[in-house]
Length: 271
Image (cartoon, rainbow, N blue to C red; front, top):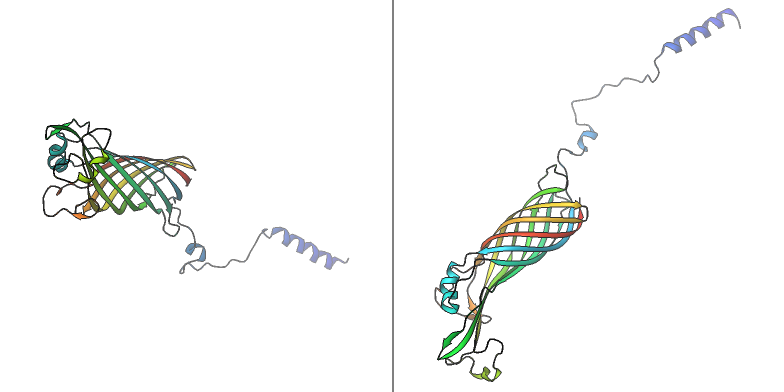
């Protein structure tokens, strides 16, 4: 190799040694338009929530029994009923996949107050036993929103339930506490009969705003504490499956409204 060629070779090696590794062409970025990665980047500012499951509800309902006690309980059994009804029910729900943290479901609830250790009543010189119950129940759709709070396994869930149900008041009078004399069946509805049984009913639309506190110790188990107001819009009162009661204020003011506190246990998938 002659001198000129050697000089050119050495110069090329020297230039290559001083060129920074990883050198790339510098292309200016257009910041006047949205970039694809910015358009499709997920918003991670708030946590997402997913749940699907079902379980049992146990509630304590406090209806307003002022009218019920004045117009029904006192005249019939000579005592006031305590303003409490233990409710039992169930619910299932699932998160809506296309609306973040919103879930829908369905629930059913019912309860009975039979707060009567009724003493015998003397009618026509004969001791008869009277028995009275207040029953309330309904089925409803639920709509909840899980607040996007970073609280781990604990969630605060406001929601509302909308549905349809009814109140039934059952009144029974019989001469014997334990047995109903079938021989009296043909005269049961005579004015002189000591054997009477009637059910007074009214249907209602129920609306229930509620605040739920949920805790999931695992991904498959969830506990719930709920505070709610059970509001009812009552319909017409009837007796014995649809017979009109006619005009009268006896049942005006008797409804299925009041405060509800409940506990729930659910199995499912909670994330």
